[in-house]
Image (cartoon, rainbow, N blue to C red; front, side, top):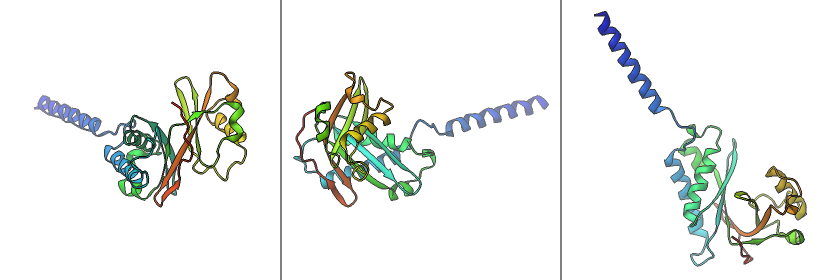
Length: 209
């Protein structure tokens, strides 16, 4: 009888442990329903405010904000809709406790979408002409990229070289990284989309990878 009780207890413990292991959330994964929810919002912004005949965006940058957190992430892909899904997943992963994020809170958060269109190389001698108000920036070193949207930049700096130095520093690079032959800067025309409509539209036709 004692042996049977011990056997039953062991089975119960094994079942309980197995159940707990299966239910434990993976901190590296985001709820797919939340990714779909945010991706659909991005798609709505793009579909409502970007003409189908317009130049195809090469990158998508997202900013999510509420009273508790302000987060951002970006991605590139062969289509803007695929890039939006990757960016949505990455920005949700940055929440302090994304496992506890609710659909209701996500729906109330402010969303700003920046679309990056084809750009061009930004050599040091052209930096003073960089458009602080409407141009996006990408710093590239080998396979690593750092992307900066013009959203929220307008009131911060007035000198392009000061901004570019701060961007280098934010990427953990030397402040004069634009003089490093192993680092390349690119400028991109952008479109900034908010819930109220198109905040800025691309005005240039640069060419870049």
